[in-house]
Amino acid sequence: MNPIDDIYEDPDGPPAWEPAKTGTAMHILIVEDDENTAAYMAAGLTQSGHLVDRSADGRDGLFMATGGDFDAIVVDRMLPSLDGLSLVQALRAAKVVTPVLFLSALGQVDDRVKGLRAGGDDYLTKPFAFSELLARIEALARRSSAPAVQTHLAVGDLELDLLSRQVKRAGQAIELQPREFRLLEYLMRHSGQVVTRTMLLEGVWDYHFDPQTNVIDVHISRLRQKIDKGFDRPLLHTVRGAGYALRAGA
Image 1 (cartoon, rainbow, N blue to C red):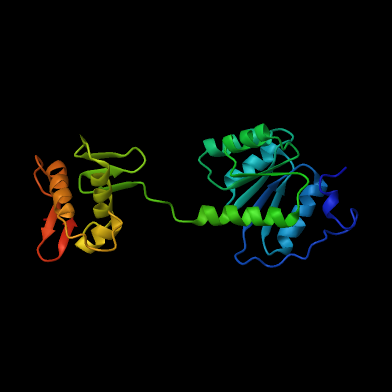
Image 2 (spheres, one colour):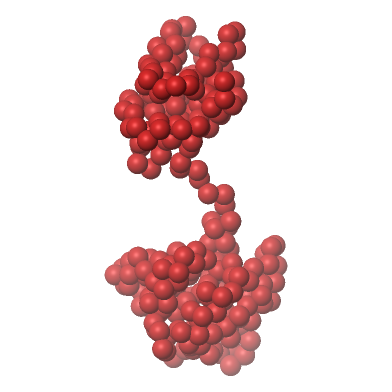
């Protein structure tokens, strides 16, 4: 039985949906060796306003995926010449980051885990509804177009890595307490700007009122000792009557 027969009103007729235009057109590659399934997806995606390329062979699909400018790729697990897992692993090894949706009749947890660990971004099992396929492709495209979160900050020779939680200046490691780390991150994200006490209270301490303590002054002093003491040029400056500024220039 064709894996998508159950979502046709007539298995020998056209798909039983009336797709709506979804906004921005996408360029989508389908790598699927089952002609009926591939034709069904291509027809629906085309009617939804998207440009679709198809391949029925794993090696050919890999060649197209590495050479084309696609917004999303739909890959079947079981393919001739090169299986879907190997195809996606090769894509990721080639630094191709195009979102991949695995499509497969293999729907056990282990199968889905293998697909995701191979480099897939999502996994949809057969039989499937076209509306879900389209929604998942759109979600992948939105995710990939979102601006990347900056995890490495630098001001002059001062560096902060949010993933490793490491701080270095001129290559020398600096140990910070959690609140000091958060304070430095905030200052670095606003480097070159004057940061007021109110901004620090809200952005670092999550206070929406002034507790009338010297907590900011104490932490600024400690931070200054750690990132500036022993170095030729200070980075953390007090702006009288306004606040503080972290900047590489004088």
